[in-house]
Length: 334
Figure (tube, helix red, strand yellow):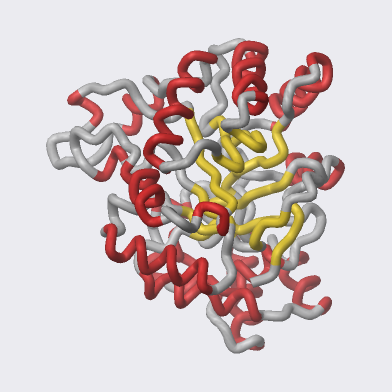
């Protein structure tokens, strides 16, 4: 697996990142270990988790299962990986976080996220480090942008954690561009450590008109990132739960709610043509397209639930898209 520089930090990371969100939830520990070993054996180094993963999978959970599994199975291998985790998105405990059928009450969860207060982040990071079995993480994200806490409080606390050696680099996720600029200006003004990574939902499909999500990269944010190459785009949900390969799965799937429409239909048509031409699947072709992006560069973050799903996606690393196919994919749309 090829490597690339993380923004302008000088640090090399694998061009594909492995998301461990489902470890300990939908993915059993034995399968999680197989996925982790297969990714490392393929040359992958960039691992991603969060302190909230995967509270919603088990009624009564407070999250942390993913970090615990990684901590157990990275012993003796910690120096082989670039390890990222996140804080701010653990909801306040309430029995009502789980519905009668065991599903998560996301409306309540989003109203009671821990947030990005200084003390909250300091305690959250200490918990993550303990579960991960390490004295530092390479990248620490504010998982969900917290508009109710002064940015100065959040940034000063994070800077202190960087100075203490508990964090190498900072990142932000699920955030609008104007907030990124405000964050960067405050860091510059006070001499605080600034974010070097932005983790957002980003795929081949474009959000439909009227979408108001702060989590999906749009044209304006892509332009901002292209102008500020010190911020590395890490694209979560790059294959949108695997909907590209299966029209039946795609129809009515919640992952399509922000994308359905004529533009998506047109882009899907061209994507399937190109996938046939290169002898691959649409899911892999989407990953290959993202890996070919340069304005700005993108690190796709995949989250396979099973070892077989990882094995199905890794061949994307070998797909070469020539200038003509890239141009067709880029130009597609209503």
